[in-house]
Length: 263
Image (cartoon, rainbow, N blue to C red; front, side, top):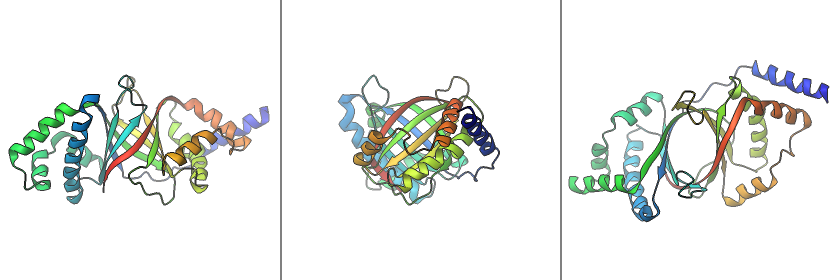
């Protein structure tokens, strides 16, 4: 056992010296929404209105796309019930959007038949229907290979991580990613990706990374959850994983279901 543990540690260290693949140029704005139960109908109307604006932003190539997810568990004491994700091709585009987006101009393009008074009324309704609880800026660091296409009804797990060691990303890419890739190839999940938090940052930030796994539907997710346990890992990989887990704190996991999508 001592020899196996030593070999696992050597494997972990040697993998850490390998150059990582070039990072992608995908940036993501996660906005967690808290919605009171009495405002649920208004909230759906609001997001449907905003989806039209996001379609215009996508057409203008200022964003790559936008999604609306419901989150679970989603009790009033368990955080946010909804999540919107906006995709950008660069950090500059993302920063411009959160600091100087002319929403009225986009709204007029998206809804040319609506009066300015009607548009202002929808913006006012937006503020009353939802509370923007958290805003997180992220960059995609790594992901599995494969042809997975999201659609309404797609489900995901979002694991919020806080790294405790600088080797955390290498551990995810070199130790955990191959296992996720195997699950993708076996049809047990659709995809996996690692996201790095840009902001909020600092010692007091809740998390530093997210790992996101996609599933075709509830059936595939349930099958994975019921069968998970590391049984597909060989002993060497399992030992390396055990050491790799020491590089992060697993804060919590949320399950998301895709409700709206703009591309």
